[in-house]
Image (cartoon, rainbow, N blue to C red; front, side):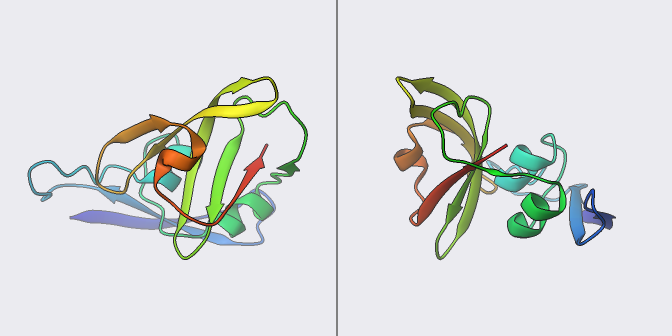
Length: 123
């Protein structure tokens, strides 16, 4: 169902496991990529967790200022979710896009992505 291989982060501090979908998903499911594969893998891979390793190893820095357009978003809670900022109005993020597991893409406000926890932005 999947081909699996690993890659190193840019600073070689972590090994990231990439899952490439081959076949076998049920109707309505898309295992080509998940939210982390969308956010960090150019919509090519399924990446289970490892967001902290990717952010650290690939040199991402947390953004605390107003300009977050195009930034990566991480939801740190009981489940970790990632997305990409699409729109900022008046210094506030008003639109992000993420993938909901094997479900579809969702463009919404950050709160409407459906994940609890602390939201942080990175570039």
